[in-house]
Length: 82
Image 1 (cartoon, one colour):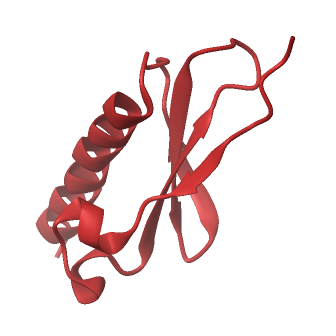
Image 2 (cartoon, rainbow, N blue to C red):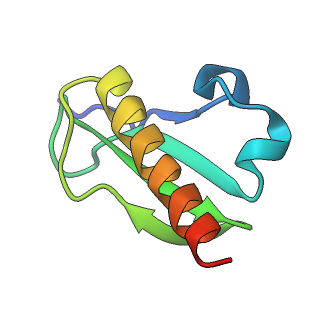
């Protein structure tokens, strides 16, 4: 029995950030294609993949939280580069 990939684009409201504060980044959370019951995330900037999870999470919520932390690091890196 295989799980159909479940894609959940994280809504900006769920990130507790405004639209302006997440642009140009997008966080995608989905069920793993390789391991049933686990989840992974990816971050895109202007639609181009820039980072993806290197570890699976046991829940969609856990993957979302881990991805949010990664977006925060992306923002911090972008701000320090200025």
